[in-house]
Image (cartoon, rainbow, N blue to C red):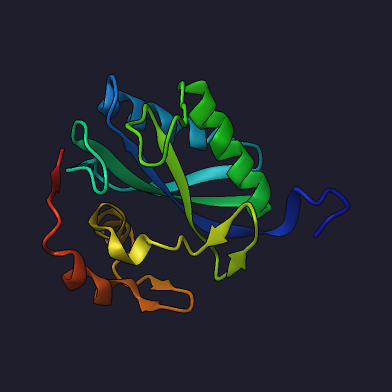
Length: 167
């Protein structure tokens, strides 16, 4: 770590999940991906296609989902704060768990880090159970390994019953 604890010396590869099902969900996800690359010390290196998925554990319209990969010198917590600012810029409200949303950003992976504190859990705790995370993630990197879980592709059959299609 540098003197500024929000930055690290060497870049880390991080994966971000995107989802929206209110308003212009497709446009919001596309614009949010562009905003991700504008975070300090962060560059967008890859993005998946957009996918349409039925909501899990909630009602409402279908979601538009994607995953993006960045190279960043931000610490995991500073990156999370940047993601939360992007959500706020898009009008994100949190009235109740699993509420429909204008934009939802999740820090899925941060290098090989395993983080579990009051603010952040990485790898994302439910990413192996969600087609809307696994399918776009595997599109970017078919050989990606989830720390403490193993190769991501081994979880794809477990989510095969979840509705997902390219948007």
